[in-house]
Length: 120
Image (cartoon, rainbow, N blue to C red; front, side, top):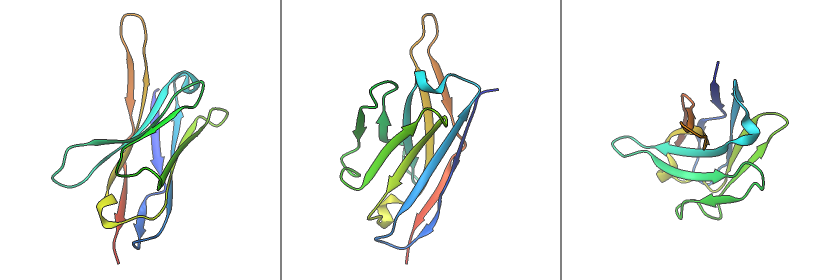
């Protein structure tokens, strides 16, 4: 059974930090590109960060560059998002996604999301 389970969200004051985790099971995690997306109320879901499967190359949305860090531990089948210097604009539900290009049909999986609220 394919599963992605996010954790680590919560309420944090502006300027604070949170570390999100996404635990994967039921598929070959190490072969997948992993993503973090977020969706704020009334807005479309947007890509926050991505990390490739082998080299661990990363990419970030301009809005989070220098503040967020995506990483992965293939031994633990887990991807992380370290979020620093949080501000109210970072308030959203954060989702992780797995993707692998396959012959015939690409593989996608989404987690259920974890709420991050930045407020004083």
